[in-house]
Image (cartoon, rainbow, N blue to C red):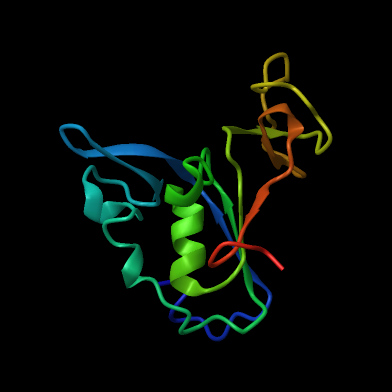
Amino acid sequence: MGLTQNGYIDGGVFFFGHGGGIEVAPGQRFWALMPGEQAGPDTNISALNVRQLSNAQLGPHATITLNACQAGAGGPNSIAKLIANQLQRRIYAPILGMYFSTNPNTKAPNGEGLPQVPDNPPVYMIQQYGNPLTQFCPGSLCQ
């Protein structure tokens, strides 16, 4: 609802949440974003329902950043690529896992050795090893 009832978005959309693989049936797995609180494919965004997404409230230059573990994993089958193709716009997403840190330049593999993240900002989501997010574009190439 936050993306459909609060006006036009011309800058960007940032998702902070869970991502990874989900099993929708025995032997059938998809990469997904998991904004829902319940189990089941209809509470997540995956190949099963990505076609329901639209650009209705997004400006022509708005980008989408997915701060969710493995949102870019799976290459052409990643949820980031599926969203890029569906919405015909650039998506930025991690291929690896992510963790929170108060240091935006940390290179810790999995956040090991970092103190517990305090309640006080600034707090950053960091991809494992400090890698930058990967850019996913509709079609085959980013221009």
